[in-house]
Image 1: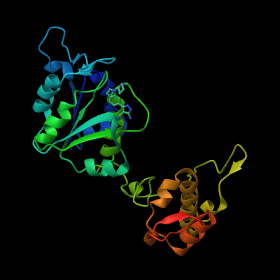
Image 2 (image 1 turned 120 degrees about the vertical axis):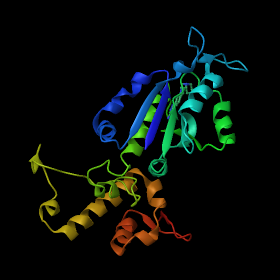
Image 3 (image 1 turned 90 degrees about the vertical axis):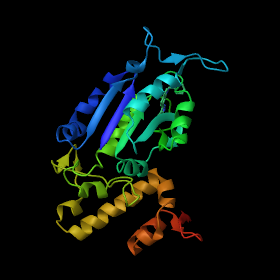
Image 4 (image 1 turned 135 degrees about the vertical axis):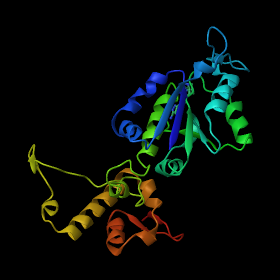
Length: 258
Ligand code: JD8
């Protein structure tokens, strides 16, 4: 997979040299390239912004500079990702979709954002343009959001994570549940002991205990995810526990609060 990031603060992305993504680059699993937007300016002040049409505070990033940069970096079939607080909220589903792309180009905005014609122009040119937000809070630019999305996507690239199995049971994975609590040595710490079942070696009981904890945690912290569960994916133990937690099958097949 090729990933390009265009920013006026390219050093912001240098953390991608570390850890999993860094190793993936060394192993040739990820072709990550970071570009300085100012390299596509022509004036001696390397200007990338100007005042907003219609007035208002702050500055807006110029479409012409972005156009030159994206035209040079974007390959045929590549997807343009524009982090923005006004975008669709990024989820694991988006990460899975983006992980199958040949190339992703992240356009990191700053100031009040990028002139809206940039996304419009590339959409009109048939490019897949994703305006995505990483959450309902305001950042100062697109770099941090790009880092979040690149890590979420990169770890799904085949060969990236040592044991692909571990991807299955994760929060927001196929099960649609949050993760169960995890423990390791020492078996007793700060007066807290490990749940006995985890020391039993009884894999079926362990698996049941973990699923129950995942259901409980999800019902408590993310009831929206319980409502989104497909009852067809639930066994009788699940249904019984969810009923105890106040969730019953509704008329439309989904789970509803009792
Ligand atoms: C891109 C400029 C700053 C945003 C005026 C503050 C994503 N979840 C998210 N929160 N914020 C962003 C984000 C913020 C950005 C840019 C993404 C480019 N800004 C602007 C509008 C208000 N300043 C984001 N993904």
